[in-house]
Length: 381
Image (cartoon, rainbow, N blue to C red):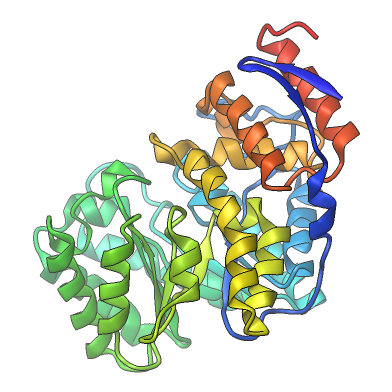
């Protein structure tokens, strides 16, 4: 079936049928897939309006991820946290997803942030209180807390000591181990200099000081700096029992595979987009089939690098586009109108890469949707 796209004709291959392999959770790696929110296409999901999700479609996508063995990373930046998903909706999302996780026996972690505060300056006490409120919400829901980077804290902190103070208080108060979060400025420019260092190596010293000062309170740290060598170096410096969850959507195959000194677990937005082949690769890794792992996962990297190309924070648009083409939602509408975040040429290239990677198993459906979309961007069929 030939589809006319902004960059020329495309005939879908349908290679994705080979990845239909739902199964149990993985045994050698923890893998959380950061999931997006499906918007209600009939609601006022326009810039500046409160988020209005399609709850059933949103939860159905999470059931899809759990069915393949992934944990779900809920209410993170992939769910448009800070880009349209307000905290009241995020809180409801966390509680609904945690309930679904219990029903299906799925793993779930969830973001703890400070986004209930108004934009603008905040004191460290206000920031701590906001974090603590959300931490309690996530723990009451039954999810593993992820202490997300805070724009408020980034704007307020005057030194590494500010971070050690705010996070130190939270770690003393938590009733369960948490995952720390380090999201680089490629994902959010307002987080530049996080952890109190303009140089990542100095920021890493702060993170390690925090973890060492609170033994047993940190399960791991999620790192999204898109720097493979830096991640490996930090991973090797972590205390025993503290995990490095890679958030590197460019270099994930090598980081998850690891080396003689260890490996990274995963908390990745790209996993939601490539769930079937990623599940097959992780099962190969579980069985010790390293060559098969590499052969399955490496072809997804071209798609991931395009999906997360600068400006990286608009990767969520591509995630929703792929979910629509794959049949996980009935429309290409996003919270806050974020479907406009990528150009037609970018999305056309993404469709090609998704087909090459075997991510579009239903050729008639994907072809029909691509034709309909192409007409709206001025490409006759």
